Length: 167
Image (cartoon, helix red, strand yellow):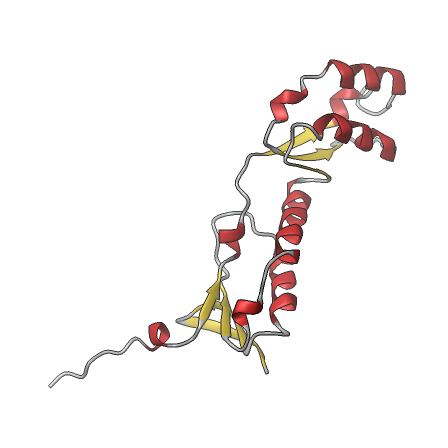
């Protein structure tokens, strides 16, 4: 007589947290100001402001924007601040840096507001694989937020997890 197979994972209190599920929808855009500089290196304030005024900012509507300069030019802080004032009515979020920095900022905001009380006293698995660009820093922020409340924290999948913390 064959023994019944019991799915112990399904019957456990084990909870999976998938950071990919928290991924904010929306197009990500790099805004490179190199082309707004004289010969790609010199920021001339008058020309920079004129270009900003003439630019079609509505194309960034509902997008996440990363402001950067791909040349080795030294960009004064006010330049990024000025561009942000034009982007503010349209973009969902504006950061200085690359797309990786943008994702880090987005996840930082999400995780700061994440209610972890539902994980109180429970064993938690932080799912590791994702198809979306979840920054490594998001995993660190999540474990730091879960550690005070979770009974235990593991990383991976229920069938092959790596233990990280246990009260």
